[in-house]
Image (cartoon, rainbow, N blue to C red; front, top):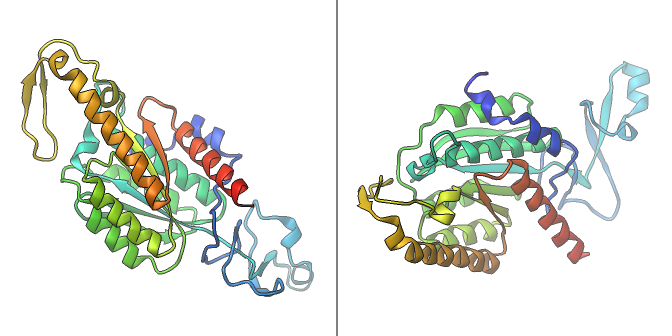
Length: 302
């Protein structure tokens, strides 16, 4: 197995293969897909054709073109469009954290990103990837081509997290660069000031982007199970510190719970989807949970 192939977990992809990721609202896309377009009028109007792709609904095949030109093409209408799915992955130094013999937060988050890319690509949706720390460090351009999946995984595999996080300028830049509405999925540990994160998210929402936050944390960060004197290595310019975990456990857990409560309150204010994803969970569980959450929200709006 190559380094990039590890980001495609066969069991998780098999469990995700029958699911669909749909947007809450209208989107602006490039090809025919699962999602409603903002440009449809009073009637469903034919636009043009595109080449047939395995998995397309055969009801949309233009049989006249097949009989006349021996080409299988799909009729494209104004009412349907594909989703522009922008995957935003935290590649800052804090994402390197993980327990020996287990995945780091970065590798877990990378597998989530690759799994979402698989799901979107399977729907013929467009995918882009941005890796960030204090800036956007690497990109995979928006594309519906099948090779985009490999490009996503290779880009994740090639980067070594080593810089500090700064979410606000990254989200602000993305808000300016994404001219069309779509779905922005941010996968991070969100170890940054929540007020700055909120400001960046508000800019994305002002541009009519739908936003999903997947909050990746190691189980030990949530439970602090350490015993005896332990040397804690600082990340993102924090110093090393030797301490007895039992002396600080209650205060630490109180701080973590306060952080999680503030995240929940913030996402509610901004109006984005949110899911905490501990790294011990199977990769498909946070994704299925988000899909169920979004499906329930769509049902409530009918």
